[in-house]
Length: 81
Image 1 (cartoon, rainbow, N blue to C red):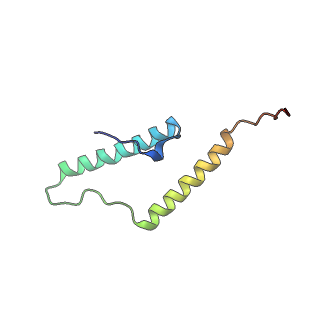
Image 2 (image 1 turned 90 degrees about the horizontal axis):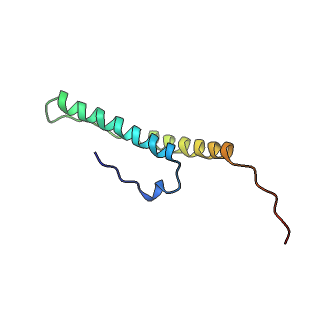
Image 3 (image 1 turned 45 degrees about the vertical axis):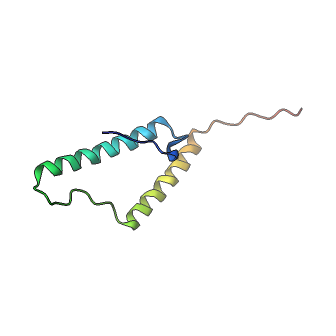
């Protein structure tokens, strides 16, 4: 199995990329198992509908923003020069 990190992955935390990789690996394992259990032709994977994907993406972006607020370090006072 191979994976391509797209430009959307730039600047992401290693933990977030690892979560995505683990999720994709789990999906691939399920697809692979389904192809071995059933004779062809058979639908082994179906992407979520548009509403479900939009809601998932919205919640992930919202979670990412709120998680970023918690991890942010307090800013240092600026010097007047």
